[in-house]
Image (tube, rainbow, N blue to C red; front, side, top):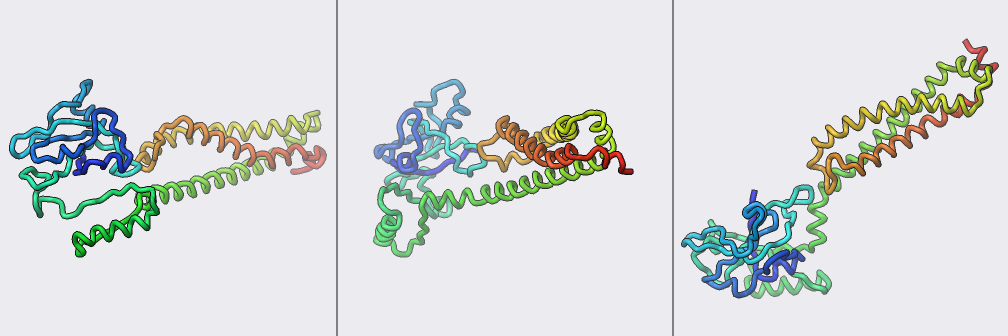
Length: 288
């Protein structure tokens, strides 16, 4: 999908969009006989792979005129944070009406527009000035105003909610895994009480008993981690639309998860292992 939008000179500077090659729009591009176009990097690579897009003519107008590429802008994620940057091109709004499609009257043309103001003043003060300026031109025009921070907050609200929800599920899963491992290890220690008593009666030290118990926990944990890695690789691809600046198979995220789960498993198994190391051999041998 290729996106497009009409802008005026100063649009790229106002939003801080770099022009990687060529130039942005200028006032002379708004003339009736000027046909300039700016394309994004991704669109330039798609239309002219391995070539320089500057100076190329694309997008034929209704009277047979062709638009010349005067600049290549950096890609922008106008479709949201979680999606990649779509190929996009920009046309300049003309200073006067003409017969080209960009100034078509309703219902074919635009019924609304956005004005972007970059200022060092307080946003509230600038908002009042903009309202007065627009009201002086037409007091019946509906007007909605928000800062870029507010706009970004609205765009990021849903991804942040999804991330928080998944974090709660992940924390619950880690807690359940730790509780389950603790229960399994406690059960194994109680089932092997006589064996531990025999080992200690034959000279096994508390340290050896503790390492034996933790070794069983390590084997259970290693098996679970291997199965978890395989499952997470499959599930991550299904949840790739919820990821932001993280690939489904990101090695750093995967390694961090393995370290965290291993640490949780060791802590969960430590209490049963210490209890096994403190068993009295005589009492353990007398148990049925």
